[in-house]
Length: 292
Image 1 (cartoon, helix red, strand yellow):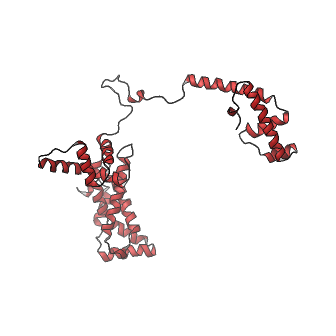
Image 2 (cartoon, helix red, strand yellow):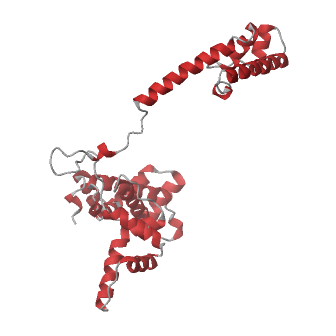
Image 3 (cartoon, helix red, strand yellow):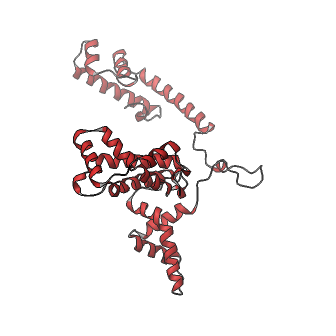
């Protein structure tokens, strides 16, 4: 596949015009970046192998992704490889970069192949990119022997071939067997057919429930108001400031205002809670509804 068939023409032209590097040149550029953070050396190293990135990106078009997006991902993989490459290990940069570019492209395809995340484990990646090819080969080989390979036997053979659990093979078959569908698609062929979204259960609170909740809150407020009347003015102040406001006050703050110790405020609060609890129980309301 020609590099300029789908990629950005400017990027393709830049990749074609870049000079190929020999082992000594790429090692020198990698050391300049690693040891001296020479950005010009890094840019030259990346540009020299952009042709490789574009070529690998083109091979992933069969998964439905656009070439511009694949090109961007391949370039990101190439940059990661250039930043991490160690020239002292005796490996050519092209060999090292292929791993990073392929990993970046695979991650992108699996993230965007479906609205339902396919997964990113080694097992899932191996199945996503190899399962159909391995299945076809195993079926051909079985057919050549006069045998039929399908169903559970085929899944087990694929699992053994790729070194993954049989359950993962079955799961990936389900993922690859269908595509995403819109909830706004009609269930019937006619225009009046209802949409699939119409059959989903409405999980929001219904009108009857809202009315019942509002009524219950009103009753509970009345119970609490009646219970508060059993307290002394000082106890009502403590309960209100400690329990019924958005920003509760501290025992120390109330103690300063009422000229009492923190321990005395705590004792008054506990006594007030006892009175409220007895009053609420007498009215048939649970005290836990109101008291923290």
